Amino acid sequence: MEKVIKITTLENDSSDFTYWSQKSPKERLEAIEFLREQFMRFNKDAEQRLQRVCTITYLK
Image (cartoon, rainbow, N blue to C red; front, top):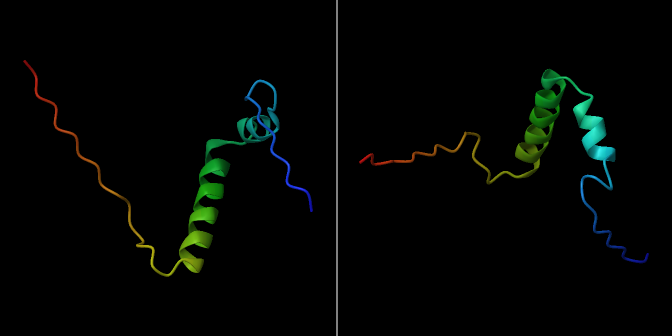
């Protein structure tokens, strides 16, 4: 099998973008959840929780 690398931009290769832009937000979230569940099933060391991020901004 020959390795092939294709470098492109969204304007030139819009197949994925076009596909997902035609899906509803609910369908997109369901797809993300499906991929997350697959990852969690096969990666036993992964924690099943969301990462918390906190940013402190000081105002003048």
